[in-house]
Image (cartoon, helix red, strand yellow):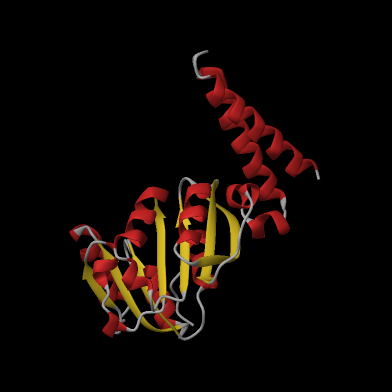
Length: 226
């Protein structure tokens, strides 16, 4: 085992990675996740990719610090970091907004043909994220809520396949609904509070928007009362 200590968020992502997979970590930042996965023989190949030169420089520095020459570091925009010859089967994207993630995955759909697994941690818009990733031909096989430095994060794992999800499942997560815990209740209460704040701030002319949010809150309240 390596002495790299990952944050709780990155450790939860690492725990979702399949043994012997070949990964690309898009938006790798410091690439500690990828170095950890290689050092612990969890993956057989890893590409760390980021669009910013600062992140790439930091990743390269960590490659030297931890003596992990097997890690391939690239400065690239999203899926531009991989080719078919790389034989990557898993994409990891973490710490980005939902629309950025959707844009990355949708930009060149042909590059998803060999991608069996997606591990996604977004900071926003989980409903839109689930809906759009499932449209790309994936199904949700695992989800976790973790709290790291008092911030809640949702991590989702997708595999190739097709499942028709309900609105509630896309909003709250089919696995999270099934495995309800205290963090799930906290998350739903956060949604309710956010909706209430929007309802109060909306001008009267946005009555339909208000009605939609009130209905959503009623659904959310029922879910945590079960």
